[in-house]
Figure 1 (cartoon, helix red, strand yellow):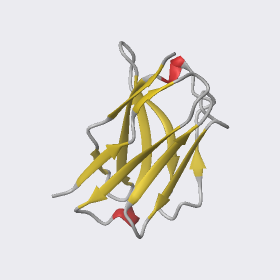
Figure 2 (tube, one colour):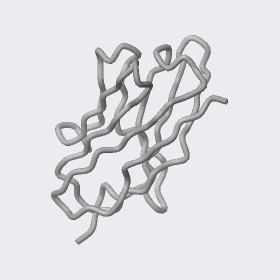
Figure 3 (cartoon, one colour):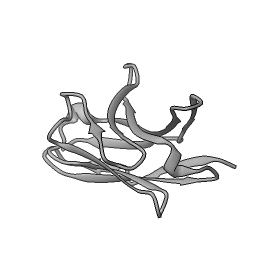
Length: 118
């Protein structure tokens, strides 16, 4: 069964760092573009990072550019989101998404909560 499982969320102080992980199973990971999204309470889900299948290209919105880094390990079927200089506005449930551009097939993880607070 194809699935994505996020981990690494938790409580962190403003200015701190956190690294999220997403483990993929049950599908050909290397064929999928991987992304991280987040959804804060009362807000729409927003894209925070994307990485191409081979990991050669990454994209970030201005809100996290320079602070967040997405990476992937195709051999381990893992994607990561390293987050630095966190602020309370980064508080959200973070989701991992896999997308096969050829077919439009996509998968979502269940999310992991990140809380930035003193």
